[in-house]
Length: 231
Length: 287
Ligand SMILES: Nc1ncnc2c1ncn2[C@@H]1O[C@H](COP(=O)(O)OP(=O)(O)OP(=O)(O)O)[C@@H](O)[C@H]1O
Ligand SMILES: [Mg+2]
Image (cartoon, rainbow over all chains, first blue to last red; front, side):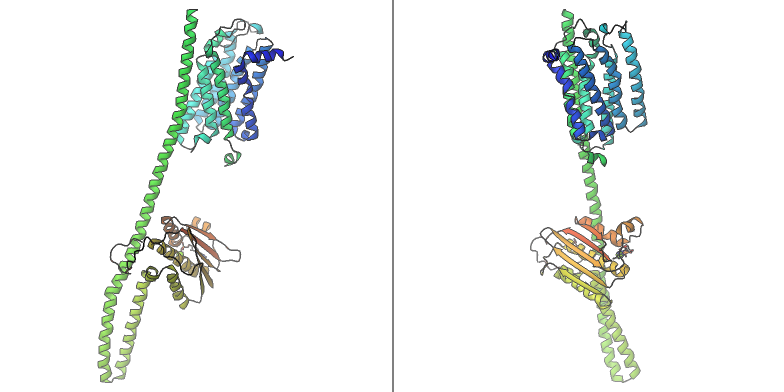
């Protein structure tokens, strides 16, 4: 019964690894009790929802069903969870306000984009990827991360970044979104369900960095210690 | 087709460039943060050293000033008193010859007053400069100090040490320990209304420990520090210790009273300089 799934995984090894590698930071979160930290709790939610969505998408893909609607819907969800982490890290009112508005903004924008990119929403078979929303999400995430880096440098409150979990999380996200940001607008054109224009290696890069990102998450979460957090 | 091929390359290059930038960004943040921290630490160190130097200088000049006063007392007043005593002796012979009872008794009184004054001046100079400490070391100095106190107080002061021969330490260190012991014992007499004081001096390879315990009313150092009750004494102990990397700890033993333990890393007297330590050297001494 899983034959088609195995076939899909064998044909798309890298993106399949990117799906299952999420398990690593997830288990680490549980064993290191990282969910005690508010930001890492949101990261945990993100990882859980990502794993679920990715597995459903993988299932749909291997049974040759159009799964792109899930991808589109995940954009505002993921953005809300990821930028929510920054909401807890920032101390300034202005930054917190920016995070909250951007969550609402991305939500509205991606819904609009789904309608905009799909003339006939009812036809799920012909569903297409959004045109701008992913790019907007990437730009916003990268700006949040850079803003956060700026705050780190300015406030000088973290003596050793290498043992600071959230720095690793930020680095992972920065790399992932950097690898994706130029590719995202083209996905709308290349990822139509029937006709997949092959972008070659460029297409694999985000998956590679998705894996790297999960590894960096794991390193960060591994560095989390409940005792230090209690202080 | 040509176009799509070019597009692929453009995308690949753009993505790689973006990634390179991200890597640089992360590396930069890490590097910059580390550098800022090192700088901060360096400034802190400099500040700490500077404060220490200030303290050191202040205590040094206090010690120099004491020496100057002691020397002036000894040289000027001491000499004058000796001369006065001499003159009085000559005068007393004359008076004795004259055979007047009343004059003779006044003469005796003046002589004993001068005698007493000389003793007082000598005591004061010796209090100002711990000569015994410099000549014979800590054990003798502490014993002498205790002896003097016990004479005119209704107190039992016990002194113990874990060695027979306490090795001589650097001049500064000995003086620090001596002054701390002085302040702790003085505090016990002043505030604790105790009947017994124990002084314990311990030395091992690395540390010298000085423990002063009394059986008086006891006190909470934290509360004293908070409530601005602290006089110069406890603060002085801490600043003296800061200069020699020492620590102090106050305890309240279960059976009442209070106990203070000062710990200082050993610092044996440098080299074998048998240079005689004149108690009243004029030049600036490095305690
Ligand atoms: N052995 C002790 N027993 C009880 N109380 C003490 C003892 N030592 C210190 N204290 C309390 O701690 C306070 C601070 O002591 P500290 O030596 O700093 O000041 P001081 O003796 O009052 O003044 P100074 O030493 O400057 O002449 C004292 O006022 C006293 O209340
Ligand atoms: Mg005192």
